[in-house]
Length: 356
Image 1 (cartoon, rainbow, N blue to C red):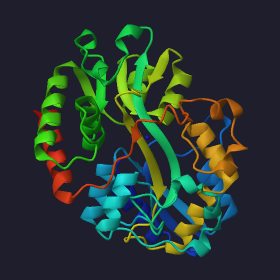
Image 2: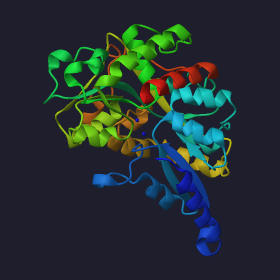
Image 3: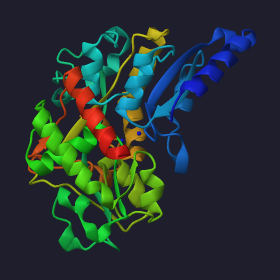
Image 4: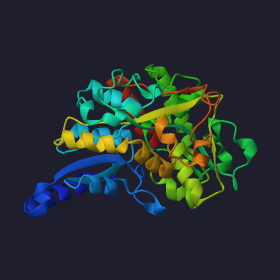
């Protein structure tokens, strides 16, 4: 679901300061921080969301940059010294940022399109009063594999990621929460455990996997899987739908019996934001049903608005990778916000495995 912004923002800020004359001085600039490859940019005839926004709101300029994991984004904002007006974290990270006072309350007078968000995505545990986030997308995590090289008989569950037959051709998440989630599903633990013994067992399981792992990745997965540099990787369903267009031999498998992650990513305004009203205008634009549909139709991620589905490609709506049935979701679970000490413990254990 998903590039570091510090240099980009510094340069952009200098440009804005130095160009303090003419038209640029009349514009409001908002800084949007999002996952890599998580907004339609006009490729292959798709909508260029930011260009369309700036066309509709010519007095608002968008400076856009990306991150590759919730943890990278969190660290950047937590360390301070930057301005971000709009950010798109995942559910559990929204909960953490809310608890730590890193998010501003939204003014829904400026976000009337929030009326289209389905009830299923309102009042969720990470933001029970919907004060701090508006759903952007939702999706699931599964295993992407290349059917040219991987035997179908081996595709039975998360244990595929430990299969020595494919040593050197397996990728793994380069973030602690997703990586530990897979180990927790495999070991039968809650994905929201705070038990140190269980976390250590998960770390041990991930350490067992390391000899077969080619590399730990986030956005790098696209080139690796599309170009057949790797054959197996866990990742987000929406990104699989992008990859399979480049390599039709790729398939997607959800370990439905063992369990898998169902996530909701939301749009938020951090406390470091300088242009809150303009940021809310941008949020409102993103969740306009037609814009939402055109954006997510290209991305492959699932829309949290039934109203938007009428504008989607019918083939995508019928695709159970993007829109699994209730039966397929029977063992899906979501990540909850974990206590800070548990998050730190998990991150430390993961880095020891990854770098050991």
